[in-house]
Image 1 (tube, rainbow, N blue to C red):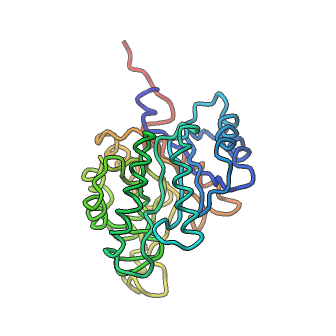
Image 2: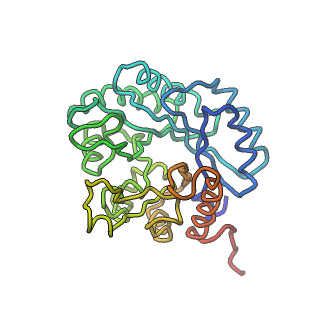
Length: 299
């Protein structure tokens, strides 16, 4: 692999969809270099079969599956929460079939309680999952999306704020627990994402390609808690982030992994324009990386 592709640019795919392999066949001609299959709350696939179908769909293309996703709340005990926890276990046990080294998703949280009250259950659940993953040579990465929660309460995730990262990694200092990081959720909090890369680089196991636009005109007129949205989640290339600097900081920090575009959020490039936006983002991120092709130095 060339030094250029030590950071690959790819996209997420819905693993619970009827035909994920067919979707992969349809998008690979656009130049995606990696895919992240992900599940939402329930893992309803025969994983060995799915892994085989995706390998067949990729064929001889230079495409990797670096990370698998399992998104839900594994800390509580309602039916869907239990299904999410079982999905994490299944993905840990079967990650090698995909060639994946990381599994990512939300930490979960005790619903509608202050964030700190989730820490005992976090230690219990993620301590067990961390040990299970360590036995398989797998890393676990926490997506940093608040899912409309905050410090005082929420339904899904406690790993949505750098102060919370300090708490959870102090509570469970396992080497194979880290972050699935993206600048979007920092901008939603009006946090500068760039210093985070320098500080948290050893814990950044995977990166999502998602951006945001902070609507400062709305903030100045209506504030951040009014009826008008003060921030919009965007596909890379349409938001505020300087991806050239982000890619540069990731390289300087030694990050070698994938940036998988998280689509289906952009308020403009969605529905019939979804793949138009994603391919624009793919090319934008490749350009920020230094281009699409490795160019050897002259002798």
